[in-house]
Image 1: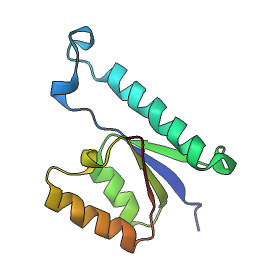
Image 2: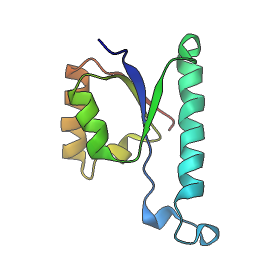
Image 3: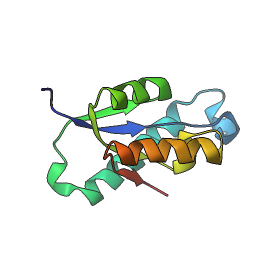
Length: 106
């Protein structure tokens, strides 16, 4: 079986872009990724060299969770995972059921 990996999900909303960003998500995504990697290193320093997959597609992330490839999920903020509190509740239920811990930066 393939080794499971830590998934990092990045999501920046359009209204979070600053004038310096223009319409580019590159800088805020890079900042979010850096914060998530730092959080992972703090939470699991012994696993710092283990494989990490970075997602900007929620659909792709959930496909890999269904395929049981993900052992842990790191997100900047839980509200990045869902559009509504009800949807987030369902997603968190699925992650708990799959035994996938979630680390957040905020």
